[in-house]
Amino acid sequence: MNIEILEANQANVDRANKWSNLWGLRRSLGLDRAVIFTVLARGWTSLAGLVTVLLIAHFLTGAEQGYYYTFGSLVALQIVFELGFSFVILQMASHECAHLSLASDGTVTGSPMAHGRLASVLQKPFHPSELIQTLRRVLEHGGG
Image (cartoon, rainbow, N blue to C red):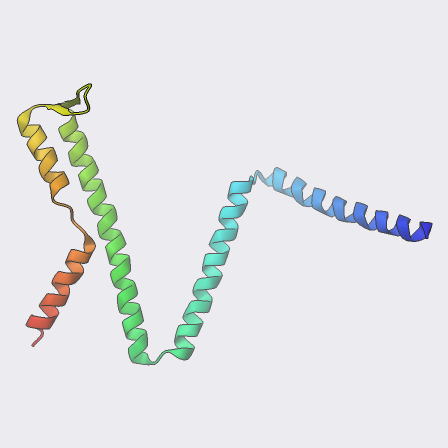
C-alpha cells in the first residue's frame, strides 16, 4: 500500500517537472500568455482553412466552387473598401476638427465651412453593400 502511494507521488513529481520545464522554455523564449494564445489561434485558423479547402474540393461541383470563391472574393473586397474608407473619414474629420471645437454643452462650434464639410462627410455613409447592389444591377440590366 505504501509503495503504491510512493509511486503515485513520484508520478505526480515527474509530471510537475515536465510542466516546469515547459514553463521554463516559455520564459526563456519570452512567450507570454497572449502570444501563446495568438499562435494557437493562427494555427487553428490555418488548419481550419486547409480542412475547408479540402471539403470544398471534395463535396462541391465546379460551378458551386465558382460561386463559393466569387462570394468569398466579394467579402474580401468589402473588407478592403471598409478599411480604406474609414481611413479617409478619419483623415477628413481630423483635418476639419482643427478648425472646430467642442463646447461645454456638447455641441460643435467653429468655422461654418469646416462644420459643413465635417457634417457632409458623416452624412454620406458608404457601405460596400451599395457597391454590390450596383454591380448586381449592372449585371442584371447590362449583361443582356
